[in-house]
Length: 349
Image 1 (cartoon, rainbow, N blue to C red):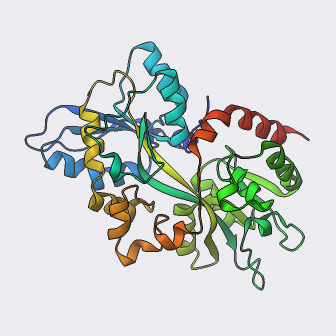
Image 2 (cartoon, rainbow, N blue to C red; image 1 turned 180 degrees about the vertical axis):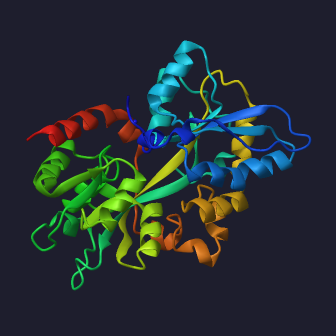
Image 3 (cartoon, one colour; image 1 turned 45 degrees about the vertical axis):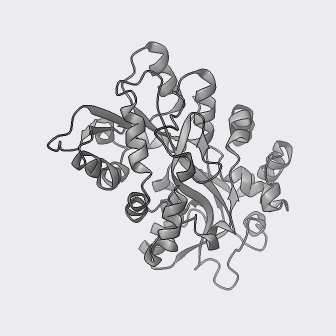
C-alpha cells in the first residue's frame, strides 16, 4: 500500500518468511510458479488448499516467497526487467493502480472464469481469490452491561469509555467513520474525506493504531484498547482464544477481496493463469476458508459452505446483508490523498 499493502508490514516480522518456500515436487509436475505472499501460516494454508493438489494433478511446482508483494516491490521488479514473481497476493485497488502503470498483465478470462468470482471482485488486472471483512471487536468484560453494536457506539467515547483501535493504513477505518456519521451502507462510497477526517480528529485522543494482524489481537488481549476495527479472521481467533472475552459482530462490517495479480513479463507466463483458475474451484476455496479463516470469492463456494464454517464466512447471505462492500475503484483513485491526510492527522500533536 510506497503505498503499503494491507499486510505489507508482516514482511518485517520474521526472517524465515523472507526465504522462498518450496512445496515438495510430485511425479509428472513440470516447471515452477513463484507465488508472492505475506508469509506466516498463509503459506502452509495455500500449500494445503491449492499448491499440493495442483502438483498432484500434474501441475507446476509452486514456490512461495513470503517477503511481501507491496505495490512498490511489484512495480520496481517490472521496471527493472528482472521479474521473479508469477502471482502476487494484493488488494483490489492495488490491482487497479498497478494495472494503470503497466506493471501487471491483464487477466486472461479465457482461462479464468469471470463468472466464478463474486461480482465486483473480478478486475481487468486482478481476480478475487478470497474475501475478508473489517469488523467491530470488543472486550466484553469492559462493556458487560452495554456492549457496542455499531460504529456510532465506537465513536461514542462517553458512553463507551476506552481506547479505540484502527489500522494504521486506513482501510476499514474510513468506511467505519462514514457509517459513524450516519451514512447508509449503500451510501458509504464515495467517501467524503473532509467528513472522515473530522470524525477521526474527534476520535484521535482515544485512538491507537495497529500495524498488523497479530498486533490488532494483542492490543485487545492486553486491554490496550477496549474495542477495535480488525480483520474478521483475527476476530474469530480472538473469540476462541479468549473463550468469549473478546466478541465481535458482522454489523456494518466492510467486505474486501484478496486479489491474485500477475506481474508483467512473469517467468511462468500463462501457467500463472492456469493455477489461478485451479484455485477458483469451489471445494478448494472451502478448504482454504477452513484453514485460513477467510471467506471464498467463488459464489458456488458460498452456496456449498458447510454449516460448520458459515459463521466465519463473510459471503454468507446472513453476513453479507450486514456488510458494506468496498469500492476498490474509489480507493484506487483516492488512496494517496487519503493516506497523506490520515498520516498528517496521526502526526499532529
